[in-house]
Length: 166
Image 1 (tube, rainbow, N blue to C red):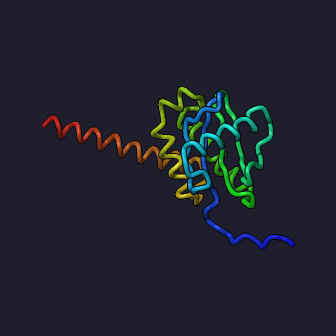
Image 2: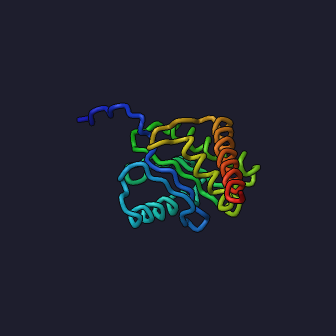
Image 3: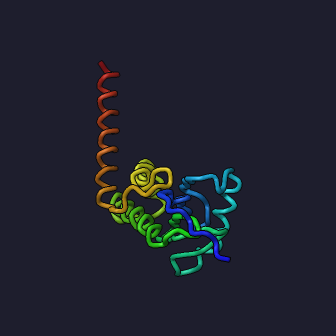
């Protein structure tokens, strides 16, 4: 018997992770309750890092999940979907995230630069994926929207400082 075909779903992304070269979490956003506790998430992240940090491939199947990943200098980027998910869709999310960060960090995609720009990372991920649904896969669009939001936040901060000084 073959399993029944999966119903198509917009909820393609289960998690977006960024780990450092020791496998420690720098960023993690889970979109469902596959790993409901931080302890389970950290165990999954350790497992995923151990399985991927020495390989050159870009796709892994782990715990019934499809994992696409990319490493750069001292960072490991992961996008996770279910086992029946289209790897190309997940890869488009991964590439969009990496390319967006690369533009935002002026091609300096490494741990220290990322930690100094976490606000941009949070905004970028929110522009690319919302609740597991892929919203955007064009890095130019993401960078543009993040710049507008950061600009708005900075303007608001400046206005607030002016108001407080009055």
